[in-house]
Length: 344
Image (cartoon, rainbow, N blue to C red; front, side, top):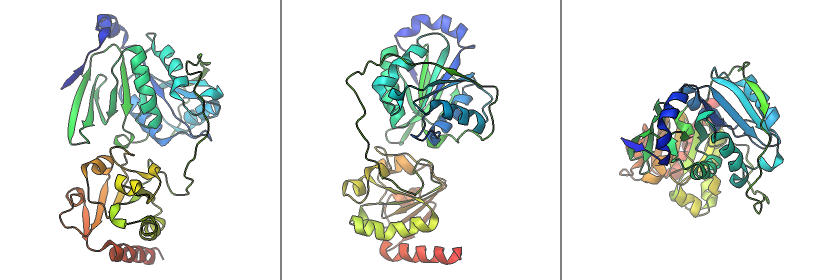
């Protein structure tokens, strides 16, 4: 077991006395349209498992509308307050602008835990908060044993570490694929409060623009079925020709290995693995993917894994529930056609 002990241990006794009454601050992300991001619903479920009362915080010009949506769409018995700030400076979650507000909230004794999803936003925000408060975050947790003891993967998921946090406050990022989204319902008892805004220290940092891939396919973080391709697909034209019809038939999201992304087969937002997205769909179909440990780290928690590969010794077969050995250029089109027939 690894123990995290920081410089704040001189405050241990007051913390032990007050933590029973302290709350968990949960950071909730929204889309630019104001919808709650699925990974935050998983983080909220994890926050509820800590056993404390929960205060959620939503930021940006859509925060007030999103707060009402949160209250009316999820059932969280521990949620007793929702803090909002409608400052448009928070719209894109620039960490230089968000961090001062979060630090200000956490500096007091109201909160013993701070929880974020292990998303791009969470990974940007949590280290800055930890540095300014002088606490070591516990990142990418997959299980909560008790309010101060957590499980997380290390070494690309090849080892599992149990961490006991002995600091005065606990800063957590949550691997969304390891926790179900919090159940639907209502949280009527939660009150909504305006928290205002904090002076932004990142005065020279500003949002310019974003070039995002627009797609009607399910987002990888919430897709129940994912079809992913590897370098064996040779080029972008082949990648699209083989994978897209299968994904369309299954109404699936599209993913890829780093090698496929680096070769230009698809956008890097579709990369799955240690340096990409971590997913856990109900069905994961790996086409022409050998199964390097870096890729397995991003998808091995999938409920059912189907591997299609011509190499019988490919490591992907060791984690697959079902394997099809053979030519992907013959198997995948045939599989797609048979699935279409079953749908009629």
